[in-house]
Image (cartoon, rainbow, N blue to C red; front, side):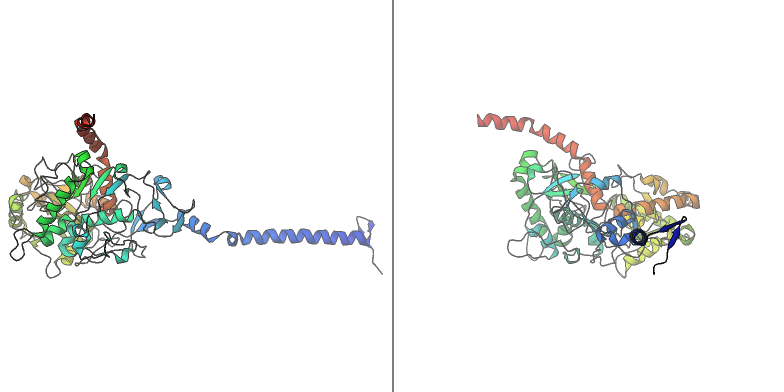
Length: 506
């Protein structure tokens, strides 16, 4: 017997009751499905999309390379749980001249960036590099490739030829720039797309000469046995002969060539013959203005040899030493001022001014001393510049520059007065002048300079792979700033050379 169902005062038929129950069940099922969809929607998003979301909402980090006294280990620039320098994405990151050759979608590697190769047509600088024999570059490091192999495989940063440590490192600019160019064509190496190596010189803005001249000087400038010419001199002579025979050199008279000569004594034999080229130098201390000048050449920072200080950098009250200097005191030429300052400051209670060298862990001791000091002296030595300035910067010790003829790297974009104190040599040797000046700088002003040092220190880091805003990228940008001037000179050079060539062909 079916019981009657009363609804709104009317008797409902069994068939209609069944229809209502089915309809209600369907509606309930739909609402249940919607609820489950909303509560577990994240499970429907692919992992690749999640990674992109995470990347776009997280900061990008890199840890610049820091070296021990030996300096032989290279940082892999991988993310670290320790404090790092924060690189904020900019709008230019959206279109930085790079792309994935195999897909329109970028493959994201969290913490490092994006696996992609650089598009030479969009790069800041297109660079043609001569395939010089290994004896001019990595062969000087002891690297030996297979028969006919010119360049080492640099796709794995953990297995690249190491540069000699100690003070050799301070002039290793040639090594970092060459590595960076080799890496520019390797998709697996993540780096900025500032400079890209091209294989056709007619497409290049700059012709790069991969000669490790500083290392050649440091290792092979002395005569051995009964030899009358050093290996360093022989390499320079061979380089001059090679360049003079190249069509690229002849077309521009070398004006668009980039030669690294960071050690002040490197390229002594060849610099006059190759003086039309652009040099990468530490300063102009041992060059005539006809060979090297700020109009055509690049001043690059030394590679610091002390460890980089990160967030554990001590503030004002945790730096008990007022003034710090440790190094060679008895120098010639402009460096005589070091002796005078040593005489004035050596007995002051809050001043550390002493002789120092790399022996007996001298580099690590200097790093500790700078990190414990408010001000670090950078005094002219045999040349106007020294590595000490860059050791001070990465130690966040406010540099006091006493060198009237110093040239500073990247000064077209960095205002050194924001984080350095400049003192004329004639004032520094006045009794009481320097200490009165520095003791008069209050904590607030010092802290402002200290904060600026921490913000700009990454511009002076050499590392492989290179990172946005580091020393390698800053050098490429400095070269790019000279591009218009170089092209102007090349065009003027071609006025008559092409006219003479045309007349001969008639």
